[in-house]
Image (tube, rainbow, N blue to C red; front, side, top):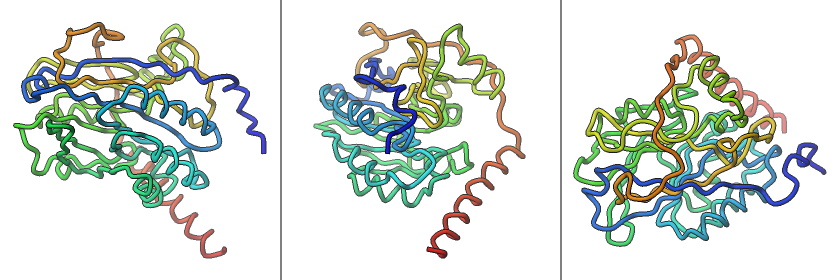
Length: 308
């Protein structure tokens, strides 16, 4: 069946490759650099044709990173494309580690986790792990999705070591502010798709003033100051959840390379750190409504399963 939205994606997908250094503490703790490729919001599903995700995989593989990290929203609204998600994850040459996003919980977190693990990815659900890449060790801290109320900082940082280079993963960027004081100098995130339209800074107006996000797209904070300071990067994402239209240079689909072990300023980066917007945290009622939405969707899936 022809995807009615496919006309947005005619021709080769345009995916930006952006490159940044890690935090100063990474240089202090690593004997040799580690290259981490960051993707987010793959949204494997009806809105974003699978060739776009596979083009992103190909772009990543050509950079030969040591590790691939993906910060949530692997799927889009349903479980119909879980086999395709597994195929996308299997296609990466480097190890893959990820955290879930709100769409993953709406679609069925357990099923998404199984699809990811079938593809060889490790999923960090409010947990941390130390991996060895070459002769270097990297500690990763992964938060489950805060948008749907699944983030648990206390669990995520349990046993965290301060003597190992550390990188944080969170679908929601604002959670970085809670990770920085725990010794996590750099957090990678997603969720916003950069607003998808960055002309005349419309993304900051929509996602900042109206939605209440402090971090919309790109690099914020400091990679050089010690805790409780830190930096967060918000990726523009690969897929889309509603309309795949993207307008503006900052809105383009992107893969971002983080060269951990290089001091900030060691090479030209896409942009300098930006000031955070004022932001507005969600109300308790909003958080409860989001949690109820997950429960309702799960109950609906269970009813359909019983009828089938």
